[in-house]
Every structure is written in structure tokens, then in C-alpha cells.
Image 1 (cartoon, rainbow over the protein chains, first blue to last red):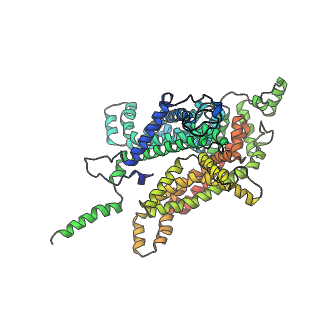
Image 2 (cartoon, each protein chain N blue to C red):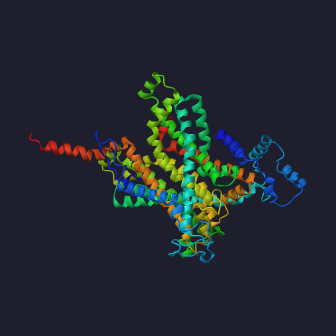
Image 3 (spheres, rainbow over the protein chains, first blue to last red):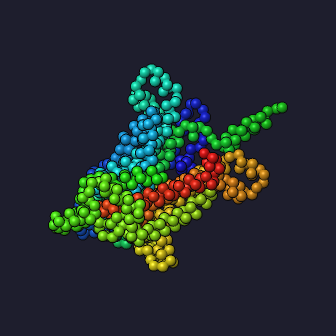
Length: 313
Length: 301
């Protein structure tokens, strides 16, 4: 979607370089940011200067200083430490959502695409119903039924994310299953399960992988939205969405309380989107291999013309 | 659409009741009440019957325009919704119009000036707005324009037409941002595809002015994917409105829904979600009709 920024031109028609370059400047930077945020959050107990729940009432709503790098919240808790610990909650939550949708969605998609018929019909109708809800609304209802809390929010979003992945896997499987290698596997007497998981799935995985990196970004946003509304992570546990909600009451006293977690969310999701886009262009050979007609014309036909012009008649 | 709505209503009804929590506890707000009163409440809200009967009572009521009575407000859900739906709908409609008016020109310009500095700048901008959650945009706008500069009110809905519109400015712009970003990206991709096609070259070769080629030829054919994305976006705007309303304390449907979820107020949650899904499905239907108007090939299928 943001291919302009990735900087892949149409390229590599030669067989030597089947793939484009993965690490263009934009992708490298976004990858570095991702690694930095993930490392800082996972190593929070080592990196964080304070306990995220330790209250220092003397420095309530303090602005950034050398003691507290990003200042303190309304209870005198160190904001920098809370952002790091909040990242742990947000990232594990997002990974949980995506993991759940993979574990349920991919097998369903494989079955639906490979067997077709009744199973396909049934699975697709269920997907239709789930998709007839505006995205987050279904998660709201699940939370209403299951009760508020981190785990329930993750489960609810996981269920909401299943149909998209199922549909994607299904459509990829339907393309793959008609290819010769599947017929060959079938005639060798391989079991359906083996064909689906060992042969079809590896051929679909690159597209699924791109979708998954995108989904992690969406999951971060949606989980933050649930926590922001008080349906997900409950205070006093640190979480980016919940911190945004707590901080907005004190916007005038200390705007950092809301803006810092918000900025981290945006940074994280922007990097994920760029990375996913880069990955997509890297893996999707068709798109990188074939230039649009205009560029093709400009690059290759003109050259040919120039060459033929130069030749003596 | 009707079968989907029936399944959706069953799903909503079942989901809300998935855990055996006692709504009577939330009705009485933890006060100590006698077993008789509890029983009375159960009978009043049909909670003594089995789930299938409860569903039938609810769905027949809904078809007659009676969505039941809220546990926490002790008012009919229908009147609660009608008090608030105006706010939510006008918010969604305003930001929908706003985002389409901004997104399509932005997308067309970046497609026409593909790979220029302007295109790259707009790409970065949209990239940030896609990644920025609605509530963050809303908070930042409130902080900058309402609290720091004092240009717009920071909460409430106002009285009278102009005052209401004045109160709607920040919320609807905040809600529109996300959609502007996505729609303009799709417009760009779709326009680039059209501008590269043969009929555009023919039109240009015939000497038709560039402006006319872009607007009446390319844009018209690029509209289908744009409309698809817009319709999906309006669905997520219905939910985004919940978040924006919560930031600006506007008291729309979103506040009602969230407070209903927190208080285990089943009739409110069921009523509001069913309504939102209904609106969403209606939008999809309208979009399907639009497709047929725009593209005769779809009409034939």
C-alpha cells in the first residue's frame, strides 16, 4: 500500500535475483525501530529505572526530569517505566490475538479450500456472519458476555480476527490445490493432512505471513481501543491503551501522560506497516518482476529503439 | 440480509449471556434486597424463563419496535436509543462526507503526480494517520485546538443547529482522519491503474483536456474499489464514533453501549448492537446498488 516509500522499483527480471531486496532504507529503519521497542519492552525489568507501580507522591504529575525521564503520572508512578511495562502487555496481547487467529483460522481455511463442498459452505457462512459486524463491535459483545479483562479482550479480538485469515488461506489453497504438485502428492498416496500441511501450506505461507505482520499492528490498535474504553486491561496494570485513557484527564497538567503511549503506538504500527509492505514486495515475485507497461516501455523499448537506430542500415 | 440478521440476533443474544452472571445483582447495584424483590425483578425482565423463550420475547418485541427495558436506566431501550442516535449518526455522516471530500482529491493528486515529492509527503502523512488510533487523534486535537488554543469546545454537543455543528467540528475531523488516510491510498492505487490503461492513452491522443481525462474518464472507472473501502470504513466509523464520543463526552450511542456492557445491561447491549449491525448491513446493500449503477457489467451478473 505504501510502496512509494519502500523504494522498490520494478526490477530483477534475471533469474539470478529472483527476489527483490528486502532491506531497503525504509524497511531497515522500521525493522530497527521494531527491534528496539520489542527489546526494550521484553527487557523491561532490566531497562526500566523504576517499578511501574511504585508510587512517589512527592512527584505527582511531574514533568520530565533527570530522575524521571518522561515525568510521572497522577499517582507519582514513573511514566518511562510504565510505557515499557505497558508495551509488554500490549505486545503479548497482540501476539496472543494473532496466534489465536492463526491456530483457528489457518486450519479452517485449509479445510474449506481443500475439500470444498459442505464443509466449505458451512465455514464460509459462519465467516459471513462474523464479518457482518463492524470490526470492533463483535469484540464488544464478546467482552460483554465474557466479562472485562485482559484475557477476555485478547480472546474476543482473536475470534474477530479469525474470518479474515480463514478467507485468505481458503483462497490461496483453492489456487494451490489445482497445481500439478498436489496431484502428484495425491497419486503418491499422501494423506490429505500431509498434503495440506506439508505441501500446500508452505506454498501459501509467504502471503499469510504478510497478512500476519499487518494483523499484529491492527491488534495493537484494537486492543488499545478496548483498554481505552475500560473493557480490556484493567488498571493499575500498565498498558498503552489504558494509560492513554488515564492520562487524558490530566492533559493540561501533563500532556505527556497520554501523548507518550500514543506516540509509541503510532511508531510501532507505522513500522509494522512499512515492514509488512516491504516483506510483501520482497516475497511477492509477480509484483516485483513485472513492471507496469509504461515503465516497461520507457525502460526497455526505448533502449531497443536507440540500439536499432544506431545500427547502420 | 434477512437471514443474516436473524443469525446475528441469535448470536448477539447468546453471546451476551455466555457467562452465567446474574443481572439482578447489577440492577440492585449490590444493595441488600430480599429474595422476593429479586424474584419480582426476574419476573419483570423475563429472566425466570428459559433462554429460548427469552429470545422469542425479545425478538417479537423487537419486530414490534419494542426493544425491552433497560436494567440500569429503568427506561425503554427504544427511547434511550432515540435520544442518542442523532448524535452518533450525525457524527458518522459528517465525518463520512468530510473524509470523502478530502480523500478523493488527495488520492487523485498523488496518483497524477506519482512519485513526486508531494506524493511522497502525502504518503508519509497517510501512513501516520492509518496507524494513529482514532482516540489518540481525538485526544491530540482536543489538546491542541480546544484546551491550548481554545478555538473549539472540548466536550458536549451544544444546543441549536449552529452550536451543535460547532461542537461537532473536532469530533468529526478526528473520526475522519483515519478514513481519509485509507481511502486516499486506495484512490491513488486505483487511479494509477486506470491512468496506465489503454483507453486513457486513446483519450489523451484524441486531444481531450487532461483535467477531463482524469475526472470523467479515469476517476469514474476508479470508483468501484474506492466505494468498497468507503463502505467498510463507514462500518468501522460506527465503532470509531464510540471512541470519539467517549473522548468528547458527547453522550451518543457509544456511551450507552459501553455503560451497558459494563453494567451487564443486556437489553441495552442487544438493542444497540443489533441496530449498529442493521445500519452496517443497510450501508452494504446501498453500496451493492451503487456498484450496479456505476458498472453495467455487475448489473448483468
